[in-house]
Length: 382
Image 1 (cartoon, one colour):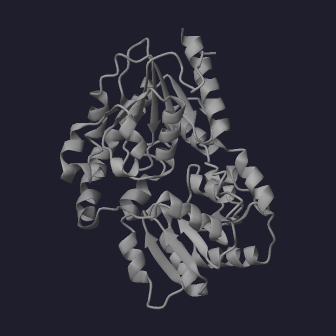
Image 2 (tube, rainbow, N blue to C red; image 1 turned 135 degrees about the vertical axis):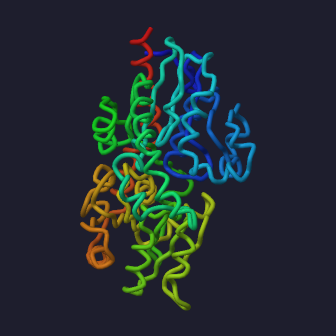
Image 3 (spheres, one colour; image 1 turned 90 degrees about the vertical axis):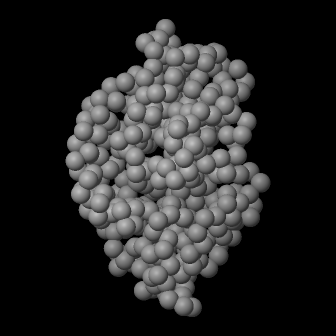
């Protein structure tokens, strides 16, 4: 094992590299947790929006040239052919340990032979591999640029896919966020990985103390096509049950157009962490319609004792127990979602048991598993 001080920092020079830090999601929360575990680690990212990540103000942060050009910084998703070069150009020569928190190109970094590179993989790049046909068929998120991208991207994607496969060879050790992701890493990268589930945050002065059952269901997360918030809105418009949608993204305009006056559905847009906790604490249940690699939002809902009504595929099969901490529906369509909601309303759930289930995914568990894994692999490399 690697010796660690009380803060969790190992006695070596550490860098944490992530794809970008521009909005708050599951991958970004893992990066923040890694930064807590390694409080002296330097942070590297292609672009950063420090407004959403105040903890970065006390850290040494290195970004790319995209950060200096606002029009490019805000559209960094349009440059997948550039981002690998960005990460290759980060100089990580002086570090003993580099951890990449990756769902895109951050694993492309180049490290010295003596440096241990651990990649915490949230997913092999979806738009190159598992979801390629959906992304370039119906999931594009760039408005008037969509027709151009549909024509241009297939020409680039083949080479980018090959580069992504080769960049996976630069990683010394993979950590997967779920068994679901572990299978994808094995299929697309031909690499073995250790599963360490992301942590859920427990607020001791909030969880369980201010929880009550409100009159609304909650859909929470980034409003991008594959998250399927439009499916939830369509279902609840039909059932006339009360729904609150919280989150921001390119799908927001579409959702607002779907909602008539005096509707039972409300779109809040971006919410702060405190607003999010309040929404989770007071909802009837979380509705989670996406197929995710893991999905941290269901765990956050369960930390408040709230059941989850989820599409029964992907990472939720590892976090939600059907009939005990939530209800599954089998296909992403409004009718089956509404049937699942009806089933939920006829059931009783034990909030304490749901919260205890979520505690098994807490921060201390994550820290212990990460430190144990890193201690083992670093020790083997020395």
